Length: 227
Ligand SMILES: C[S@@+](CC[C@H](N)C(=O)[O-])C[C@H]1O[C@@H](n2cnc3c(N)ncnc32)[C@H](O)[C@@H]1O
Image (tube, rainbow, N blue to C red; front, side, top):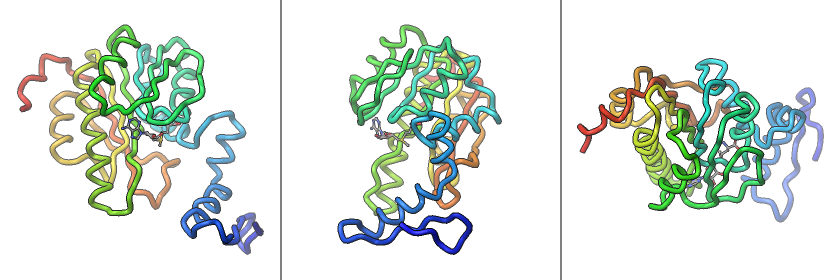
């Protein structure tokens, strides 16, 4: 590891056992101010700042009392929710293990598993007023496949939110390539009074990641018309 010519920039030498891709990842991590800030402030992930920044713009965390966090690991978003809304009950799910967080019930399982919906609802004990999804499918490097897999997760999260949220509730989800798929956007606009896209400053400029923030859930009465 060496200091590069740019001010304070750390360059990582390639090593025999390291692929070019992981060398790039390591270099990016070492030079990412959000990674340092997250560590200094005790957040488990730099992703925590994305939720903080989205909340600064759209104000949905502090009033939340029942929260579902889809793709919770390693737990940055759940930490933010508990910090900004200490009374909130949070239920999180991830394929990966997540270390315990006070006030957060954690499930290590696939959200696409047919049992997941009921488990999350039962554990929360009440309808959520906030459903968060930061889920991202592992990429395989084939753009179309990666897009379809991630959109599949977004779609599942949308339908979960529509089927469980309290009227007035909020749904926030990571989406890709500039926004929500057209059909999903139509669905969201039908069920929420406000649907906005945002790219928080903590989201890397080069990534195609965006977030959709749907607020003012109209309630289940509007649900039946989709096939
Ligand atoms: C960007 S990370 C989430 C970071 C988290 N918001 C935080 O602040 O710590 C995305 C997560 O989605 C999870 N994930 C991807 N597909 C999933 C699925 N089908 N079911 C549950 N979790 C999934 C991944 O395992 C990964 O931990």
